[in-house]
Length: 66
Image (cartoon, rainbow, N blue to C red; front, side, top):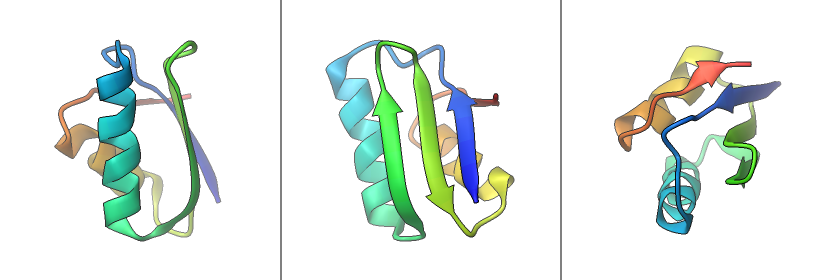
C-alpha cells in the first residue's frame, strides 16, 4: 500500500536524511521517497497509515495525509 504525506516542516537536506534514515531503520517499508522540493514523503508499506505517519512524527516532523 502506498501512503503519501505532506511534511511542511521539512526544510533542508538534513531533514530529508533524517526521515529517510528513520524508514531505513524501521524496516517495514519496501520503498520510500522523500522529496524536499515538494515537501512530500511517499512510502510503500503493508503497515497502516497511522504507523507510517508515526515514523515521521517520531523524528520530529508533522505529517498530514495527502
